[in-house]
Length: 596
Ligand code: ZN
Image 1: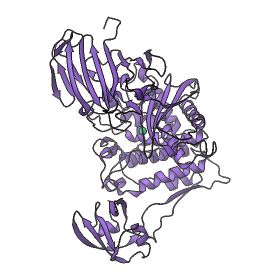
Image 2: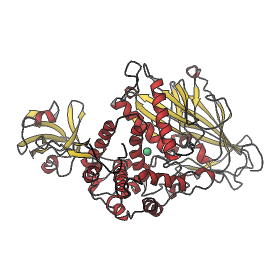
Image 3: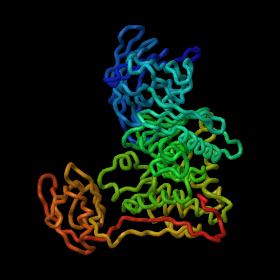
Image 4: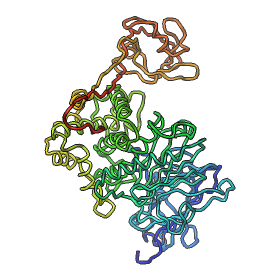
């Protein structure tokens, strides 16, 4: 466009808070003369599942110079407006009633949305400037609402309604927006302003502690990637958090993150104001650390197929073990390095990860490269058979990072570590990503970089642990660093080797582990346990089984659908892994541990 006014302009108004409707108007100054095509993304970057956001568009219409214009639906998420010289105005309503960081939500308490849920893409004009005017809702409930987003203001005060601007569509949809009467605290991390926004009621929230801890985490990550300059890759950053009774999750963006957490995981002014964080608070800080690390790893260092994203179909990459797994490795590790938690607390978190990977036999069948590639159909669409069929590229990916880190430290006698690989990835593929030089990294380039940095030949590790499913030699590697890995599983405890959940007053099998006692006896996920040895199952089945010994035979009655069935179960020893990690390094010489 030659003209200086914006070619594309959206106005967004939270129109009906009780009906959960955003009203959006899009004005296209110079539409495609052959008929402008518009599309809503089918997925949101960072969450690898087709979600069909267009299903929430309630009504849509087009007008050309004030006259109604024909709009033809092309497929599930695209429309074409009849030819119009412009301006073309498209107005639509978006139903927003999904309390998730990936979609949009609106009621009397707040409004939250991702651009992928509300902004139609104007095909052919993605590289143009996009303006958005956010309009304060008329509803009295919204009289004290403010706006939190990292999207740059054009005609708006910070935290105010008004006009915001993005230099292209990709930037527009990478800036979620929170509106409401939220708690807000700000701090600077190496000179860059950061906001913490908390929506949802949290009694006695210790904002001061949160601010202090997040500042330490952010500064340690900025210094990790830019040890010399301590220059952050963004001009400001916003942590948007929705506190609920029970919830956990986050989604990364280039200059912000949307989080959902359990309110009781947030620190309270009536609890300890400093010192070792509680398990819940550590979990929340780990989530913040994870999403913040993505600012570098996946928002700037990216798989080549994400540069650019194709927003209408699946984007397949075998590299999520690097982008999610390595991020999961560093999220906790950087908590120790930032002084947030002790090494002992860190090793407890790591042992938990090891136990979760060892629990499922899926790890012997699916590699993390395949798990990454199939994320769209498998990891994101897990069913009751998941532990027996798939492996998580998050948890196993983070253990692979540990294997690489310890191997590089050991073989280079502590001169190099995985940190150097991350820095090289950042230097070569990340730092200039949004300066027009970004192109993403391929699998072959990732592998070559590992060898180049450490001066090692690591292909066998890629074959065995990333493309293959070989067990990770964690105990052996850790031993060289003064950490003892022990597995104290209770093999003398009788078990069905299945997980249960409450279903009303009943107990229902939720997962049956392959090769376990329940599997061998013919029990299945979904079966309702009625009786063990003729006694009604009304307390926890584990408690009932504790009266028996490994090898005992018991009769289990269960309903499958509505038929009562009987199973002869031979109780097996509990196979639940119980790995612990203990530091035993008095007088040890040699390379430093990643967390030491
Ligand atoms: Zn992640």
